[in-house]
Image 1 (tube, rainbow, N blue to C red):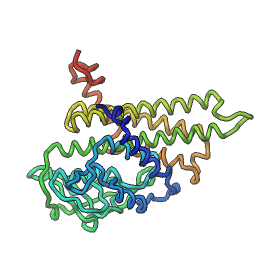
Image 2: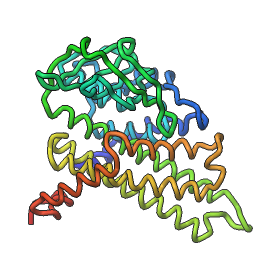
Image 3: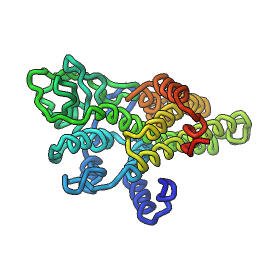
Image 4: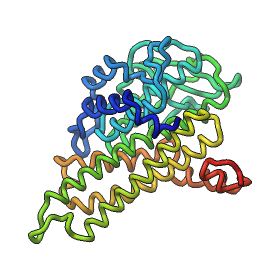
Length: 346
Protein backbone atom coordinates (compact mmCIF):
# COMPACT_ATOMS: atom_id res chain seq x y z
CA UNK A 1 0.00 0.00 0.00
CA UNK A 2 1.41 3.38 -1.01
CA UNK A 3 1.65 6.35 1.31
CA UNK A 4 -1.25 8.08 -0.45
CA UNK A 5 -3.44 4.99 -0.07
CA UNK A 6 -2.52 4.70 3.57
CA UNK A 7 -3.55 8.30 4.15
CA UNK A 8 -7.14 7.19 3.53
CA UNK A 9 -7.07 5.10 6.69
CA UNK A 10 -9.13 6.36 9.60
CA UNK A 11 -6.18 6.20 11.99
CA UNK A 12 -3.97 8.40 9.85
CA UNK A 13 -6.79 10.83 9.15
CA UNK A 14 -7.32 11.15 12.90
CA UNK A 15 -3.58 11.61 13.40
CA UNK A 16 -3.45 14.36 10.76
CA UNK A 17 -6.43 16.09 12.35
CA UNK A 18 -4.79 15.94 15.77
CA UNK A 19 -1.63 17.51 14.37
CA UNK A 20 -3.56 20.33 12.72
CA UNK A 21 -5.11 21.13 16.09
CA UNK A 22 -1.82 20.77 17.96
CA UNK A 23 0.17 23.24 15.88
CA UNK A 24 -0.85 26.86 15.53
CA UNK A 25 0.27 28.53 12.33
CA UNK A 26 3.19 30.94 12.55
CA UNK A 27 5.49 31.63 15.49
CA UNK A 28 5.81 35.10 16.94
CA UNK A 29 9.47 35.91 16.32
CA UNK A 30 10.33 39.07 14.44
CA UNK A 31 12.75 39.73 11.61
CA UNK A 32 16.29 39.81 12.94
CA UNK A 33 15.47 37.99 16.17
CA UNK A 34 16.85 34.52 16.78
CA UNK A 35 14.19 31.82 16.88
CA UNK A 36 14.22 30.17 20.30
CA UNK A 37 13.14 26.65 21.11
CA UNK A 38 9.42 26.56 21.92
CA UNK A 39 9.76 24.60 25.15
CA UNK A 40 6.03 24.60 25.88
CA UNK A 41 5.30 23.00 22.51
CA UNK A 42 8.21 20.59 22.93
CA UNK A 43 6.83 19.49 26.30
CA UNK A 44 3.49 18.79 24.64
CA UNK A 45 5.16 16.81 21.86
CA UNK A 46 7.08 14.80 24.44
CA UNK A 47 3.94 14.08 26.42
CA UNK A 48 2.24 12.81 23.26
CA UNK A 49 5.23 10.69 22.20
CA UNK A 50 5.86 12.82 19.12
CA UNK A 51 9.38 13.84 20.09
CA UNK A 52 10.52 10.29 19.25
CA UNK A 53 7.76 9.28 16.91
CA UNK A 54 9.77 6.76 14.87
CA UNK A 55 11.91 5.42 17.71
CA UNK A 56 11.43 1.77 18.60
CA UNK A 57 8.95 1.07 21.37
CA UNK A 58 11.58 -0.92 23.20
CA UNK A 59 13.81 2.15 23.21
CA UNK A 60 11.14 4.50 24.49
CA UNK A 61 9.84 5.65 21.10
CA UNK A 62 6.38 5.43 19.59
CA UNK A 63 7.27 2.87 16.93
CA UNK A 64 5.81 4.79 13.99
CA UNK A 65 7.27 5.05 10.50
CA UNK A 66 8.01 7.60 7.83
CA UNK A 67 4.38 7.96 6.81
CA UNK A 68 3.48 9.30 10.24
CA UNK A 69 6.72 11.28 10.36
CA UNK A 70 5.79 12.93 7.06
CA UNK A 71 2.50 14.15 8.49
CA UNK A 72 4.27 15.51 11.57
CA UNK A 73 6.96 17.30 9.57
CA UNK A 74 4.44 18.85 7.18
CA UNK A 75 2.35 20.10 10.09
CA UNK A 76 5.40 21.53 11.84
CA UNK A 77 6.54 23.18 8.62
CA UNK A 78 3.14 24.73 8.00
CA UNK A 79 3.15 26.17 11.52
CA UNK A 80 6.77 27.37 11.43
CA UNK A 81 7.10 25.42 14.67
CA UNK A 82 10.29 26.13 16.60
CA UNK A 83 10.99 22.54 17.64
CA UNK A 84 13.65 20.04 16.45
CA UNK A 85 11.30 17.20 15.53
CA UNK A 86 13.52 16.00 12.66
CA UNK A 87 16.82 16.38 14.49
CA UNK A 88 15.76 14.74 17.75
CA UNK A 89 13.99 11.73 16.27
CA UNK A 90 14.87 11.07 12.64
CA UNK A 91 18.57 11.94 12.93
CA UNK A 92 19.89 11.84 16.50
CA UNK A 93 17.50 9.16 17.74
CA UNK A 94 18.08 7.05 14.66
CA UNK A 95 21.86 7.31 15.01
CA UNK A 96 21.69 6.21 18.65
CA UNK A 97 19.55 3.18 17.79
CA UNK A 98 21.82 2.31 14.86
CA UNK A 99 24.80 2.30 17.22
CA UNK A 100 22.95 0.36 19.92
CA UNK A 101 22.73 3.18 22.45
CA UNK A 102 19.75 3.81 24.72
CA UNK A 103 18.03 7.16 24.19
CA UNK A 104 17.14 8.90 27.44
CA UNK A 105 14.67 11.83 27.53
CA UNK A 106 16.02 15.18 26.38
CA UNK A 107 16.48 17.51 23.44
CA UNK A 108 19.00 16.28 20.88
CA UNK A 109 20.46 17.32 17.58
CA UNK A 110 22.96 15.55 15.33
CA UNK A 111 26.03 16.42 13.30
CA UNK A 112 28.66 14.84 11.07
CA UNK A 113 32.17 15.85 12.18
CA UNK A 114 35.06 16.42 9.81
CA UNK A 115 38.62 15.21 10.43
CA UNK A 116 39.25 18.14 12.78
CA UNK A 117 36.16 17.46 14.86
CA UNK A 118 34.20 20.37 13.37
CA UNK A 119 30.67 20.68 12.06
CA UNK A 120 29.00 23.76 10.63
CA UNK A 121 25.40 24.94 10.64
CA UNK A 122 24.15 22.40 13.18
CA UNK A 123 20.42 22.93 13.84
CA UNK A 124 19.32 23.82 17.37
CA UNK A 125 22.70 23.01 18.92
CA UNK A 126 22.62 25.80 21.52
CA UNK A 127 19.27 24.52 22.88
CA UNK A 128 20.14 20.82 22.87
CA UNK A 129 20.87 18.83 26.00
CA UNK A 130 23.19 16.61 24.00
CA UNK A 131 24.57 16.30 20.48
CA UNK A 132 24.86 12.96 18.68
CA UNK A 133 27.93 13.01 16.46
CA UNK A 134 28.98 10.81 13.57
CA UNK A 135 32.61 10.74 12.48
CA UNK A 136 35.08 8.62 10.58
CA UNK A 137 37.89 7.05 12.60
CA UNK A 138 40.63 4.65 11.61
CA UNK A 139 38.27 1.84 12.65
CA UNK A 140 35.41 3.18 10.50
CA UNK A 141 32.37 5.39 11.08
CA UNK A 142 31.39 5.81 14.71
CA UNK A 143 28.60 7.39 16.75
CA UNK A 144 28.74 8.99 20.18
CA UNK A 145 26.47 11.20 22.26
CA UNK A 146 28.08 14.24 23.88
CA UNK A 147 26.74 16.66 26.43
CA UNK A 148 26.50 20.14 24.95
CA UNK A 149 28.88 21.35 27.68
CA UNK A 150 31.66 19.25 26.11
CA UNK A 151 31.32 20.94 22.74
CA UNK A 152 32.79 24.26 21.66
CA UNK A 153 29.97 26.24 20.09
CA UNK A 154 29.89 29.38 17.97
CA UNK A 155 26.35 30.66 17.57
CA UNK A 156 25.04 31.34 14.07
CA UNK A 157 21.67 31.50 12.33
CA UNK A 158 20.22 30.83 8.89
CA UNK A 159 18.19 33.22 6.73
CA UNK A 160 15.09 32.56 8.84
CA UNK A 161 17.01 33.32 12.06
CA UNK A 162 16.83 29.67 13.12
CA UNK A 163 19.84 28.47 15.18
CA UNK A 164 22.48 26.89 12.94
CA UNK A 165 25.56 26.80 15.16
CA UNK A 166 29.15 25.84 14.39
CA UNK A 167 30.69 23.13 16.57
CA UNK A 168 34.09 21.78 17.44
CA UNK A 169 34.76 18.63 19.44
CA UNK A 170 38.18 17.73 20.81
CA UNK A 171 38.98 14.49 18.92
CA UNK A 172 40.72 13.13 22.01
CA UNK A 173 37.42 12.85 23.91
CA UNK A 174 35.61 11.01 21.13
CA UNK A 175 34.77 7.43 22.00
CA UNK A 176 31.83 5.74 20.35
CA UNK A 177 30.46 2.66 18.70
CA UNK A 178 31.05 1.61 15.14
CA UNK A 179 28.20 1.82 12.63
CA UNK A 180 27.93 0.63 9.00
CA UNK A 181 29.85 2.67 6.44
CA UNK A 182 26.62 3.65 4.67
CA UNK A 183 25.31 5.43 7.76
CA UNK A 184 26.77 8.78 6.73
CA UNK A 185 24.99 8.62 3.36
CA UNK A 186 21.73 7.57 5.00
CA UNK A 187 22.09 10.54 7.36
CA UNK A 188 22.21 12.95 4.42
CA UNK A 189 19.22 11.43 2.66
CA UNK A 190 17.17 11.28 5.85
CA UNK A 191 17.93 14.93 6.60
CA UNK A 192 17.13 15.98 3.04
CA UNK A 193 13.78 14.20 3.04
CA UNK A 194 12.89 15.73 6.40
CA UNK A 195 13.58 19.22 5.06
CA UNK A 196 11.55 18.57 1.92
CA UNK A 197 8.55 17.45 3.97
CA UNK A 198 8.74 20.50 6.21
CA UNK A 199 9.08 22.69 3.13
CA UNK A 200 5.96 21.37 1.42
CA UNK A 201 4.04 22.00 4.63
CA UNK A 202 5.30 25.57 4.63
CA UNK A 203 4.36 25.98 0.97
CA UNK A 204 0.80 24.92 1.79
CA UNK A 205 0.61 27.65 4.40
CA UNK A 206 2.10 30.23 2.02
CA UNK A 207 -0.59 29.42 -0.55
CA UNK A 208 -3.26 29.82 2.14
CA UNK A 209 -1.89 33.25 3.06
CA UNK A 210 -1.84 34.36 -0.58
CA UNK A 211 -5.42 33.23 -1.17
CA UNK A 212 -6.61 34.86 2.05
CA UNK A 213 -4.93 38.16 1.25
CA UNK A 214 -5.87 38.41 -2.42
CA UNK A 215 -9.47 37.49 -1.63
CA UNK A 216 -9.88 40.06 1.14
CA UNK A 217 -7.75 42.91 -0.25
CA UNK A 218 -9.68 45.25 -2.57
CA UNK A 219 -7.96 47.45 -5.15
CA UNK A 220 -9.74 49.49 -7.84
CA UNK A 221 -13.09 48.30 -6.47
CA UNK A 222 -12.20 44.63 -7.01
CA UNK A 223 -10.52 41.99 -4.87
CA UNK A 224 -6.91 41.46 -5.91
CA UNK A 225 -7.76 37.86 -6.72
CA UNK A 226 -9.96 39.03 -9.58
CA UNK A 227 -6.97 40.40 -11.48
CA UNK A 228 -5.53 37.95 -14.00
CA UNK A 229 -1.92 38.78 -13.13
CA UNK A 230 -2.55 38.00 -9.45
CA UNK A 231 -4.37 34.81 -10.37
CA UNK A 232 -1.31 33.76 -12.37
CA UNK A 233 0.93 34.33 -9.34
CA UNK A 234 -1.30 32.17 -7.14
CA UNK A 235 -1.64 29.49 -9.83
CA UNK A 236 2.14 29.21 -10.15
CA UNK A 237 2.47 28.85 -6.37
CA UNK A 238 -0.16 26.10 -6.34
CA UNK A 239 1.51 24.33 -9.27
CA UNK A 240 5.01 24.37 -7.79
CA UNK A 241 3.75 23.37 -4.34
CA UNK A 242 1.78 20.47 -5.84
CA UNK A 243 4.81 19.27 -7.78
CA UNK A 244 6.95 19.39 -4.63
CA UNK A 245 4.23 17.52 -2.73
CA UNK A 246 4.03 14.80 -5.37
CA UNK A 247 7.80 14.35 -5.35
CA UNK A 248 7.87 14.23 -1.55
CA UNK A 249 5.09 11.62 -1.47
CA UNK A 250 6.95 9.52 -4.04
CA UNK A 251 10.12 9.71 -1.95
CA UNK A 252 8.28 8.58 1.19
CA UNK A 253 6.74 5.69 -0.76
CA UNK A 254 10.19 4.68 -2.03
CA UNK A 255 11.62 4.73 1.49
CA UNK A 256 8.71 2.66 2.80
CA UNK A 257 9.28 0.15 0.00
CA UNK A 258 13.02 -0.32 0.29
CA UNK A 259 14.70 1.88 2.88
CA UNK A 260 17.27 4.61 2.43
CA UNK A 261 19.96 2.30 1.10
CA UNK A 262 18.05 1.48 -2.09
CA UNK A 263 19.09 3.34 -5.25
CA UNK A 264 15.43 3.94 -6.14
CA UNK A 265 14.79 5.63 -2.79
CA UNK A 266 17.88 7.81 -3.09
CA UNK A 267 16.89 8.85 -6.60
CA UNK A 268 13.38 9.71 -5.37
CA UNK A 269 14.77 11.77 -2.49
CA UNK A 270 17.13 13.61 -4.84
CA UNK A 271 14.19 14.36 -7.14
CA UNK A 272 12.10 15.60 -4.21
CA UNK A 273 14.92 17.82 -2.92
CA UNK A 274 15.44 19.23 -6.41
CA UNK A 275 11.72 19.89 -6.96
CA UNK A 276 11.26 21.50 -3.55
CA UNK A 277 14.39 23.59 -3.94
CA UNK A 278 13.38 24.99 -7.31
CA UNK A 279 9.79 25.45 -6.14
CA UNK A 280 10.96 27.54 -3.19
CA UNK A 281 12.19 30.29 -5.53
CA UNK A 282 8.87 30.59 -7.35
CA UNK A 283 6.72 30.23 -4.24
CA UNK A 284 8.64 32.84 -2.24
CA UNK A 285 8.88 35.32 -5.12
CA UNK A 286 5.24 35.08 -6.17
CA UNK A 287 3.92 35.19 -2.62
CA UNK A 288 5.74 38.41 -1.83
CA UNK A 289 4.62 39.91 -5.14
CA UNK A 290 1.01 39.03 -4.35
CA UNK A 291 1.11 40.43 -0.82
CA UNK A 292 3.32 43.41 -1.54
CA UNK A 293 4.97 45.30 1.29
CA UNK A 294 2.86 43.77 4.05
CA UNK A 295 4.54 40.40 3.52
CA UNK A 296 7.88 41.89 4.59
CA UNK A 297 6.60 43.51 7.78
CA UNK A 298 7.52 42.11 11.17
CA UNK A 299 3.86 41.69 12.06
CA UNK A 300 2.93 39.47 9.10
CA UNK A 301 3.83 35.78 9.16
CA UNK A 302 4.65 35.34 5.45
CA UNK A 303 8.37 36.06 5.78
CA UNK A 304 8.69 33.38 8.46
CA UNK A 305 7.66 30.73 5.95
CA UNK A 306 9.40 32.06 2.84
CA UNK A 307 12.70 32.55 4.65
CA UNK A 308 12.50 29.01 5.95
CA UNK A 309 11.92 27.31 2.61
CA UNK A 310 14.74 29.34 1.08
CA UNK A 311 17.03 28.30 3.95
CA UNK A 312 16.03 24.65 4.18
CA UNK A 313 16.77 23.96 0.52
CA UNK A 314 20.49 24.48 1.22
CA UNK A 315 20.68 21.98 4.08
CA UNK A 316 21.86 18.38 3.58
CA UNK A 317 22.84 19.28 0.04
CA UNK A 318 22.32 22.25 -2.27
CA UNK A 319 19.79 22.35 -5.08
CA UNK A 320 22.67 22.22 -7.56
CA UNK A 321 24.07 19.10 -5.92
CA UNK A 322 20.72 17.31 -6.12
CA UNK A 323 20.35 18.35 -9.76
CA UNK A 324 23.81 16.95 -10.45
CA UNK A 325 22.93 13.69 -8.69
CA UNK A 326 19.82 13.29 -10.83
CA UNK A 327 21.80 13.97 -13.99
CA UNK A 328 24.47 11.44 -13.03
CA UNK A 329 21.81 8.81 -12.29
CA UNK A 330 20.15 9.43 -15.65
CA UNK A 331 23.46 9.10 -17.49
CA UNK A 332 24.23 5.79 -15.80
CA UNK A 333 20.74 4.30 -16.17
CA UNK A 334 20.09 1.70 -18.83
CA UNK A 335 16.45 2.78 -19.00
CA UNK A 336 15.88 6.42 -18.02
CA UNK A 337 12.09 6.13 -18.28
CA UNK A 338 12.01 3.25 -15.81
CA UNK A 339 14.28 5.27 -13.50
CA UNK A 340 11.94 8.26 -13.59
CA UNK A 341 8.68 6.33 -13.25
CA UNK A 342 9.94 3.66 -10.87
CA UNK A 343 8.54 0.99 -13.19
CA UNK A 344 10.16 -2.06 -14.77
CA UNK A 345 12.62 -1.58 -17.67
CA UNK A 346 11.05 -1.48 -21.09
